[in-house]
Amino acid sequence: MKNNHYDVLIIGGGIIGHSISYYLNKSGVHAAVVEKQASGGKATRAAAGMLGVHTENEGVGEYHQFCEKSRDMYAGLDQELRKLTSIDIGLSHFGMLEIAVQDEEKEALLLKKSAFPNLEWLDTPRDRISSLSNKALGALFMKDDGHVEPRQVCEAFKRAALLCGGNLLEDRTVLGFENNQGSFMVKLDSRSLTAEHVVVASGAESGRWFETTGLQNPIVPTKGECFSIKLRENYFNEVLFFRDFYVVPKPDGRCIIGATSKLDDQTTDTSVGGLSDLMNRLFSFFPEWKDAALQDFWSGVRPGTKDGVPVIGEHPSISKLYFATGHYRNGILLAPATGQLIENLIAKKQVEPSIQELFSPSRLAEEGEVTYEYST
Ligand SMILES: Cc1cc2nc3c(=O)[nH]c(=O)nc-3n(C[C@H](O)[C@H](O)[C@H](O)COP(=O)(O)OP(=O)(O)OC[C@H]3O[C@@H](n4cnc5c(N)ncnc54)[C@H](O)[C@@H]3O)c2cc1C
Image (cartoon, protein in one colour):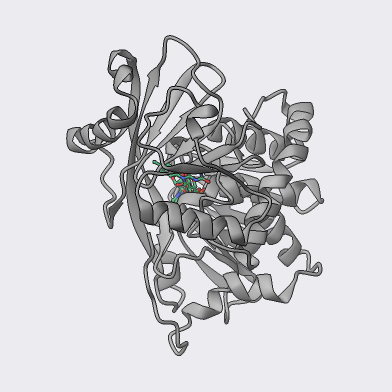
């Protein structure tokens, strides 16, 4: 950095901001992250860490391929980040089971199986997970999907970016920026910085940056609550994904149960009602777990978008201003591919036009004809 000048300034130190910083600094582009509190303390901290390529997609397509690519990047990152930072990102390879309890869920899963022939249909999932209630009518086994430890991934990206020459300013809030003869003047609460490029990666708080730069605000903050328990024994290693809750068994013996979904809610408390709903859903399948020790509970705000697609790309009319936000419930899954995509865009490397189009902020230009349909 010379005189507080950076190649790229990233607003937000969650998993997305730090992934971008890692890929940029690794390729020799000097990037700094500005985080208003502590890194990874918002949505990233709340996530269960599922890499749910097939729970998040009903069929093949561009978005599915992007999810798959990002999931697959984790295998290499596991080694790469461990070598650089000694951090274990908690990558689990035991797969996920999406479970049908009602006839229409079974039909939907069988349809999904026909879209993804590599998935395995289990008529009797209790053969695999013996503690599962016999209410289960069948399950899709997704052997390549798994989970990571989101806080560890974020911390590893953060430290690796710093080791590659990056900068981090924590407890500093970006108040605004303006484009000044081809570069940006970025105003923090404490001082000003300049940068050639700015990337907005501020999660559920990204909405204002769309509005202040003349775009429609696509962000729908969606609160989620979770809790974790400690079981007496390790019943299974696979993630169990039901229509209205999931169970993610972590290698240290914790089981994360999630999650509620409250649209347009940015409050930070964890409600008794939310937890009791989740517990009732859990106990209807695992009544014997009522004796498990409650370990923790928490909430976080997912950065949803009105059309259900993240916004990753350059502003349609402000050159060198990028967005990397709106990952809703897939930000952990999509962090590696998002970081790499922003690096490719800034470095003017070749990016598939269909991917650019899918995530493009151009769809938010006022004169655009986007019809918003929020999907949960
Ligand atoms: C309960 C729950 C469960 C989830 N489970 C999963 C899961 O299993 N798998 C999955 O893939 N995803 C999951 N998610 C979604 C995932 O957590 C998010 O998509 C992801 O964390 C988004 O990362 P981010 O970096 O964009 O946002 P954040 O982690 O929220 O980071 C944004 C950062 O920007 C900072 N910031 C904001 N404004 C400013 C400013 N003006 N100046 C400086 N800094 C600023 C904030 O302080 C924050 O730290 C879950 C989310 C929740 C809530």
